[in-house]
Length: 208
Ligand SMILES: C[S@@+](CC[C@H](N)C(=O)[O-])C[C@H]1O[C@@H](n2cnc3c(N)ncnc32)[C@H](O)[C@@H]1O
Image (cartoon, rainbow, N blue to C red; front, side):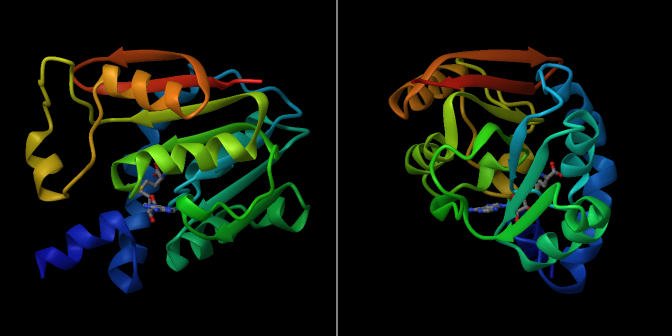
């Protein structure tokens, strides 16, 4: 029974998944707000939120990109439904578009976005090196990839949330890992910001 609950963190499904994503929008609000303080969103930006979950971050970014467009991508049907429902006014107005799909096969064409965001989701990405290349492909040259995580590991191996990392089988990256993966995927000068015991956000610019 608990295995089913843990699986829903990775890919929310069915009633359990629906319940989880409702609580996720609330539970993740503090980390999202902290992360967004470090991201400069301009009114006309075109943004993609990968692993959009319950759509709380799509809603938040629509309030910042007032003349722009915010898209969402998730491989969970219940997440796509919930994000569309929460952001239905923007979807109906053509300011938001939410698609079902995997980070590994991003459905948008090359050079589509000024910013791609990933809140609390890279833990589950199946092929970080390859998935970053997909992120790079859909970003315009000079565009920003932004990662925001509550759980991280330091370069000397300290991971305050080790229980959850093991329980949920999460992929966790050190600051050196982020530098290495992002640079190899065509991003310049990743900037890593940390706070408190484990929060991290990473900003990296797609090279021209
Ligand atoms: C912990 S939730 C975070 C949701 C949301 N970003 C937030 O901060 O509340 C992780 C999300 O990533 C999605 N996800 C995980 N792996 C994915 C993949 N390979 N492709 C697309 N979405 C993925 C899950 O379906 C889930 O909605």
